[in-house]
Length: 91
Image (cartoon, rainbow, N blue to C red):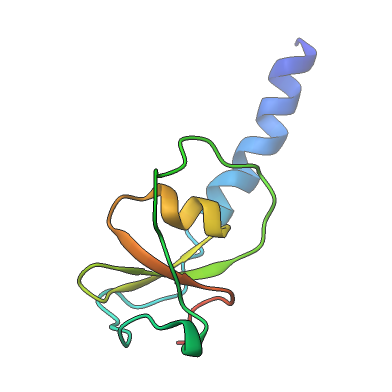
């Protein structure tokens, strides 16, 4: 077995387990973003590539639904996200 297959077989299960760890019920709503509350609006051109640095944030889409993203970049890369907060969403 080649080295790349070995690495893939070791990393794939970990990625699959972490992929299902959202932790938020669907449809949770948040107040409108405001700088005073710590919410940062996603403005300008959306990022196309983000680093793999894990710094979880709470993203709020245009309908007010909250979801956890790996970083501010990952949150704003999603075109439905209007703003992000520098901490994971509370349950």
